[in-house]
Amino acid sequence: MDIFFPQVCAICGKLNENGLCMKCAKTLETFAEFEIIEAESHLENKNFQDFMYVFHYEGMIRKLILDYKFHEKSYIYVGFVNFILKNKKIFEKLKSYDTIIPVPISNKRMKERGYNQSLLIAKKLSKALNIELQENCLVKTKNIIEQSKLNREQRKQNIQNVYELKKKQILKNKKILLIDDIYTTGNTVNECCKILQKAMPKKIDVFTIAKD
Image (tube, rainbow, N blue to C red; front, side):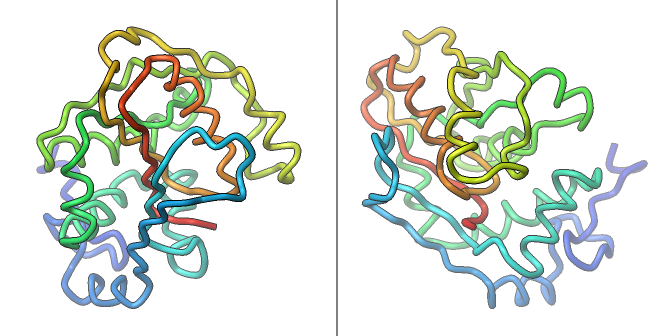
């Protein structure tokens, strides 16, 4: 695969096996926040504890994520993840979990896009951190209107009752890290965590590339 589709820099597009050249990595550093928020209080009935993100969803970061999700540039996640793993603060925090779970997408969306953007990030983090990945415990059973097309109240209603928990026994007493690409209102990850709470894990935290 590397011969036919060699890895390129997420930003400039030049060949680079790490997905991010040194020049563009320095550019990303100017946007990086690396925030760990221990008390996200704006959500009603919050179902997770800590929330972590790396960038604000604006400017170049917004364009990269939109290209990643909607313009068939799946390779962009490699640059993001390798950049994240070089930050000691985030790296040490991420190492403390037992299980990584990506926010799932519906089968219809998977067929349209060809990949789950959150799963690609979760897989690479799982491998780099040597933490188990559970990609079939949380599943999306309904195809819904894209959250980005709705307002805050509509998003809350739209995302309800669309996820299902499988094999919940393997998540009991585990420290779970839920992975998504963007945190906007928090309704998507909160609904996912509500379902995951049924497995009685030790804790659930959320990590996203960007926060709107």
